[in-house]
Structure formats: C-alpha cells, structure tokens
Length: 218
Image 1: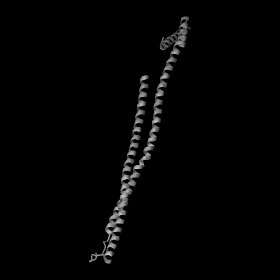
Image 2: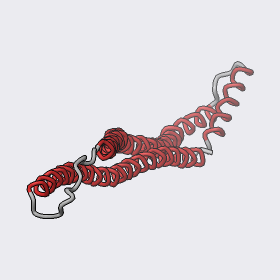
Image 3: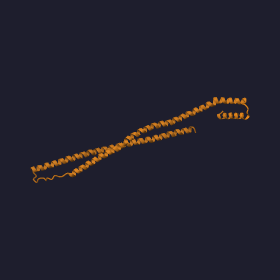
Image 4: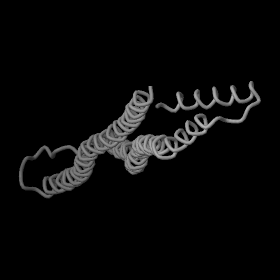
C-alpha cells in the first residue's frame, strides 16, 4: 500500500470516528496497528532509501558544480600568469622603437655633419709651379697638397666609419625590434586565447552540469 493510500485510509477512519462519536472498533484498531507496522517497517525505510538516493544524486551534482569552480580557479591562475608575462613584455616594443629612433637620429646627424664638412672644404689656393721640375717650389706645392688630402681622407674616413657603425647598429636594432614585437604579439595572443578558453570552458561546464541536474529532477 502506498503512502497516499495509507494516509487516505487513516483519514477515513478518523472522519468516521468523529462523525459517529464512537470509539474505534476492534477491526479498526487492527487496521491502524497494521498500518502503523507497515509505516514503520516498510514506508519509513522506503522513504529513507529514496531520500538517501536523492541525497547521493545531489552530492554528485554538487560535485559537478564544484569541479567547474576548481577548474575555473586553476585556469584563472594560468590566465593571471600569462597576463603578467604579456604585461611585462608590453613596453618592450615601444622602448625598442625609441632606441631605434635614437640611433636613426644619430645616423642622420652624422650624415649631415659629413655633408657640412665636405661643403666647407676650401681648395688649396696655391697653383702648381710653372717649372715642372724637382724644385723647392714644387716640393712645397706637393707637401701642401699631400697634407691637405691626407687630412681630408682621414676626416672623411673617420666620419664614414662612424656612420657605417651606426648604420649597422640601426639594422640590428630594427631586426631586434621586429623580434621583440613578435614576442609580445605571441604572449598577447596566448593570454587572450587562454581568457576566451577559460570563459568558454566554465560556461560549458556550468551549462552541462545544470542541464544534467534539471533532467535528473524533471
């Protein structure tokens, strides 16, 4: 006999006793005793078993939701680490480009300096002696020109060497900045992907667990 049927039978007996004003008959007492025995030995254990089963299912669902939260915490820590990595690398491209710009400015100034120097060169005023022979005048002329061109060669050579050095530094810095930019882009993309995956995984976990819960108790 189900619990609802037992309840209905007890209600009927109570209603009848109240209506007649008579005490329970022997048969009614036996019925109540049987109902009480059935309730204690069958109904209550059955209710407890169903309760235990429901509690077990609830524990399973609670564990499912807890698992979602644990995964979220783990993934959030990974996101935090990646965020720190990309944040620390964020300023590197800007700093590198500033250094590259400084080197390019130095290179430009050196080129301008060389141009100004070449434009400022004054040719020798002395003319070659008319007598093209090993004379003191020819010796003086040769010495003066030799010193002039030696100085010109030394000055131009030094400036051009400095410019070449800076040009090489600019090239190396440009390549380095490109690499630094790629490193930052990679770190940023990795962080952004992890953020999206963390949100998606948490949402899917909660949705699947919630759906299972509702299906179980529908």
